[in-house]
Length: 216
Image (cartoon, rainbow, N blue to C red; front, top):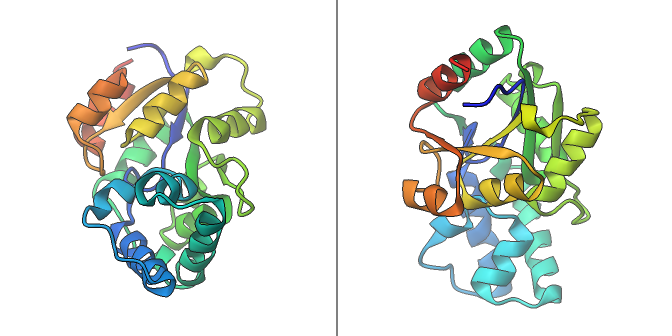
């Protein structure tokens, strides 16, 4: 493994299990719009919300914007806290931070929500920077968020930065920005998904991820 000094973490499916809140808010949006809830809600966990409504439900731009607006009615007050931190995450973050690594968040979730979630679960002090999407739809894709975080951190040596996430969007976003990516298996993505997307490393548990990084 290369020597990484800066780690960018995805949020949903990597630091926290947000499935309950996301599915409940998806159902809320579908009910309000008079549409049926998709059979396979799992595929909505991870990709940007705008992308999911368009790609998986075939919505046009106006429908997507309306669906996102309704989704956030519930998510901004209730759904974001229907959530839990994965076992082993606080210990992993402490080990990595104590080793001198710079820890940051790069999530497709709106940045304002990400900060509130990390505050709620007392994880915010672990991170130097929290980067996410804008509520106006800017920085909607993972590579855009990664570029934003790198700029905020004034990082020029991309060989020293590793993206860590659970879905193919994390891998593809990292590679598009010239970063390597560690796929993790305690979230929503499968080994096959991460492997096929080209993940450079794969870890099964938070402890395994920390051990791999501390052995560099």
